[in-house]
Image (cartoon, rainbow, N blue to C red; front, side, top):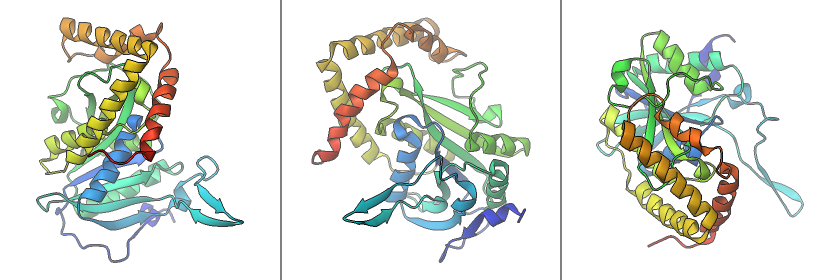
Length: 312
């Protein structure tokens, strides 16, 4: 029972892979912080737009605390009719050129983190994975009207030389994804992660622009050919709706303008690079309306999108 490989089983009719055929593993786990649903949007987008086959499934009963994150069930006309089965899986995805990669997605484990990490390491060894990439979103005090920035981290400095350092030293609640990267680094394996910095007032709604930026980052470091057009199109629609909502509220408009001034003045004085850039932008937010108050307005507005026909 102590063998970490007991945490997963190979899926029925799983594709056979040659050693090293899928050199990249991307993971986007739900449960820790994921502003704008950036990581989950990316996983859903790649699974839907690219040829995908199930490789293996983790035993979710051994990893999930059901009472902390109760799955949704549907009750209708006197009977239970649907159960949203939680899952944590690894799929084989082939890009537009037919190159294979592994995509791990689903719920972050609540339990047995070390054993889970060991199980993923065994998958990495089994299939000859050379690079592991984690993706998610984090909320930041930045305006949606400016280019998205990305916080990058890696097991070797050389992997992220081209990226600015936005933080000096911080302590944050841990995650299974972060622990995986730490343990891989201790083994001398290459792993990195991208956290796209999502405007804090849009952190609770789906923000396709953030997922699109993560796709770009994966493409840049892996050389894979990944589709991005649909995410960009959805992002354009969301941007237009957010702009309209901002224009309709003097309070929200004032906040966005204040964020723009802080962002622009810092970039002008210091450039986008440099430790503490985002921290300094964040420091001026104390006197502004809370992100929760702004997010509530945006969520109420954007929720109506589900009832609207798709944009042409």
